Length: 254
Image (cartoon, rainbow, N blue to C red; front, side, top):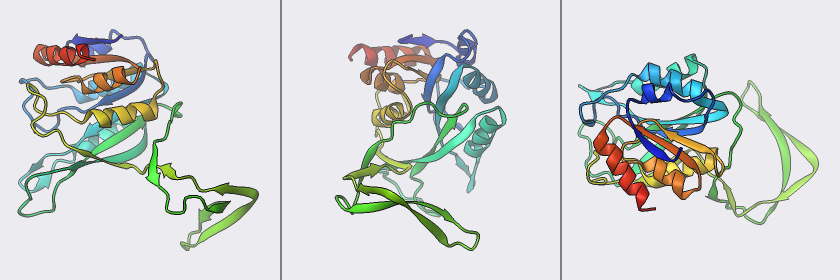
């Protein structure tokens, strides 16, 4: 625990006990969009090991996108999400990571400005700490609680609950599109990192203090850094000795 391990992620995970990890937050190198020191990974083998080491009720956050070749998106992100379902994970939420500050427009399509964040659950999720930062326009008003369902004809049927009134809070639960400024230029020595805030907000959402957070392809150590800052235990794995040294140097400065 609380180490960066240099090695093949599948082989390292095979040494771990079953149901050992509370949360995984990772962004694999996908579709050859970035050079990764010449390394590649076995997706299906990794997915199976993640299922084995994840605790019942635990979560895997898989941040991924698709490459476009000759005007055709690969669709590998969807294929991976469906494979996770095949081996036993539930696709709990399909979230969007919206990238702000993109520089260049596409000549034949709209700006490509997002990646998927697949939230995969092993059984019933045991931890959810919702982020509440969406400002409510009706803040302070008294509302009546109701149970509602939409009929087959599209009409919303409301059943008001007697005695169930509440005052609208200032902030409501965040929606599932999260926006961040991208790491332009990135940390020297690594071609692609997601924001520390992105990792941190998933860690806050799906784990508690002292839980174990894993990144099996940790690169520059962003997930591990966020976990350490938020008082979680962590394990980072990477096959590149250079990236392992980079991650360790970042963690030593915390």
